[in-house]
Each structure stands twice: as C-alpha cells, then as structure tokens.
Length: 255
Ligand code: FPP
Image (cartoon, rainbow, N blue to C red; front, top):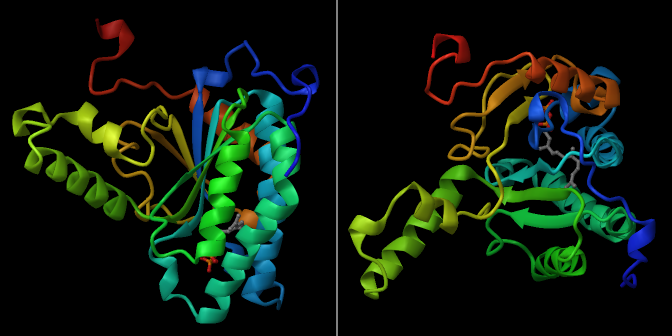
C-alpha cells in the first residue's frame, strides 16, 4: 500500500463554486459495446477504452474542483450479461483499483463504494474495502463507485435495516421519515446528485440513484462513453448552469 502523501503536495478542494453551484455529478457510462461494435471490435475492447475515459474524467473533475463524482460501473442487472463479459468487467475493476489507486490517493480523492457487496467474490470485496480504507481521510473529491449497484436493491436493504431496528424496539414506525431512509442507504452522508449525465443517447435512469435523484437535473448526450471527454463534461456543466432548479417550489421571480 502507498504511504500517506505529504498534504502540501495534494489537491485541495477549490473554494470557488462550479457553474450553477454543482457539487455532485452522477455518470451513467453507457455505450461501450456500441462504440466497439461500430469499429468491428469486441465489447470488452469497448469497456477497456471506457476505463481510459473514466481515468481522464476523474483527473478532470479533480482539477476543476468537483466535490462528488458517482460512476455507475456495474449494475446489479449486469450479471445477466455473458459470463465472459461479466468476468472482464470484474477484472477491469481489479485493474482500476490496482493501477489507479495510488494516483487517486495522491490526488487527495476519497473513495466510497455503493452497492451490494454480498454477491461479490471475496478478493474484489477486499480490494474495495482496502481502497476505502486507504483514502478514508482524504479531503478532496469523493469518488463514489457504484459497483453491483441497483437502487431497488439499495432501498430494499435500507428498508430491511429499518424493519430490524423496529423489530428490536430501537425505532418506532412513526420515526421513519425521509432522513432515516437516507441514513440507511449506501449513500448516507453524500449529498444528492445535482446532475446526472448519461451518454449514448439512452434517456433512462436504469436503477441508478432513484431515491437520490428525486430533484436531479439530467443531461443526455449522443456520444458513446469511450468518446466522452473533458469538453463534453464541461458542456454538461454549462448546460446545468442554465437550468432553474425549483425543488417543487416556485420560480424565484414569482415569489
Ligand atoms: C455500459 O455500456 C457500460 C458498462 C456496463 C460498464 C461501464 C464500465 C466502464 C466504463 C469501465 C470502467 C469499469 C470499472 C469496473 C471501473 P454497455 O456495455 O451497456 O454499452 P452498450 O449499451 O453499447 O452495449
């Protein structure tokens, strides 16, 4: 494991707000397969290029001073893909953690992993725990890795945890509110995403942060994930800055 780098050499979070005050961006990295298919390559080659795009995006979001970046890396539904593709995605996660963790740590990024760890192979589970432990005290961007993640599964686990607290007499049913649900989700303590970006032209949430995205803005772009770059990300932020978020209230000028 890498030793704790000198704080002075590490990226401090920027103090000036990003366009529109965005703090948390979620990304659905879609289109690796289609990108590869269009080039006569295997789907796994698409995922390999997708990982390169992800590396560039992490560097970019750190450099612009984003506070939280959540990446949808493997959904709880992705197990239904061919076994070869599933095992390639598992090996890609391993490669990502083994090769990139020290750079991520050096950049003062904290890693949080969301998703159901029970079905994961123990070696992968341990890698995720090690990545979280190593970066726990970092104070720059939080990189939230959604792995074996699905909102329905996350909400089900949260409801089960609350039901257990009620059954034990530690919680009264009337105390269950939005905050206690929030506190039992994998994302506890992480602000809701302001903006969710999905590449590849599909316009759906696909079981990603369904509870947390209640008031998120959405940005869909046509390009496949391996073609997504820093300029495309900045364009999404600019688009977001032009939105008016009302959270169920009225426009500022109507008040
Ligand atoms: C969706 O594209 C993408 C995924 C299911 C995997 C996303 C993974 C990466 C971007 C690489 C980084 C991965 C890790 C584990 C850190 P798709 O395959 O559904 O594309 P398609 O809709 O064109 O078939």
